[in-house]
Length: 327
Image (cartoon, rainbow, N blue to C red; front, side, top):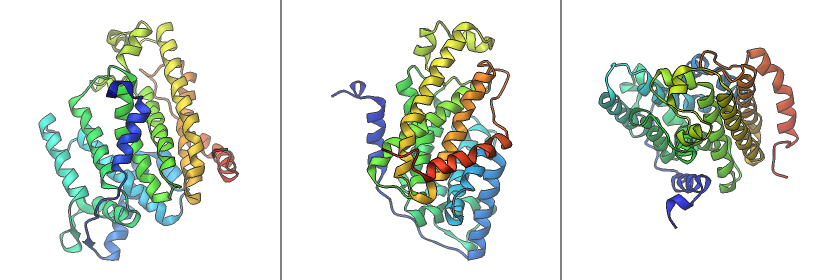
């Protein structure tokens, strides 16, 4: 059977399964104080860059919370190498930086004697991988996906885009499952779909910002189907064709969320509320896009802290009563 005849869900499930086996975790010898400082550093990174993730991870028990924020810091630093390179280098330089980061974050042995400020998030991340048996291959896939932003600026179809979403977002969910616990392989397809839904939400929210950075993640064949082209993105005008296109994309994202949410019941009990909150609060961004009349060129859809807090009791109750779980 050719790859083209396999659905994007099946292709991504195969990638996830191949990567699922935990790899060897390199040993590290550090003092407790250094480790605590490293986790605190990761918490600050999370609080600075993602209010939604900082809030949702705050719903986890203490050690899980620290591990989730160490994972976030690993992902944030990986992303910043591409979007905000310290050296100001071009594509080749950033690819080299990404390669070096992969080596330092996934293969280095660390000790208190050699620890530098730059290694602090690596220390917490290495400890998290060791503590929770997070497969190295998922982290490698994430770095692979982030690297695509240096070599690829367009996606011809949703199948291609879904593969990108898997690499940069579903892998994060798959690694998070190892932190909070999960029932078994049957949970993997739900994590994949949730990751695709979350990243698609990002893409729809950030169309204008991404275009300014020279990137267009929207599937070009679907743009054409609605009578749109890159000139329309450049113009940044909300037309009837654009509204119809965005409604189609938002409907698909909501469908992916709906298909993913039953997997909440397959997660460890202590993590269900946090993951449900993250999914529901992020899905609210789609509603904000609609309220902004689909203007993602000059307005950035976001929810306020109060709007998020107000949603939490209902999310907690639904997670507590298995309202998201498989029936």
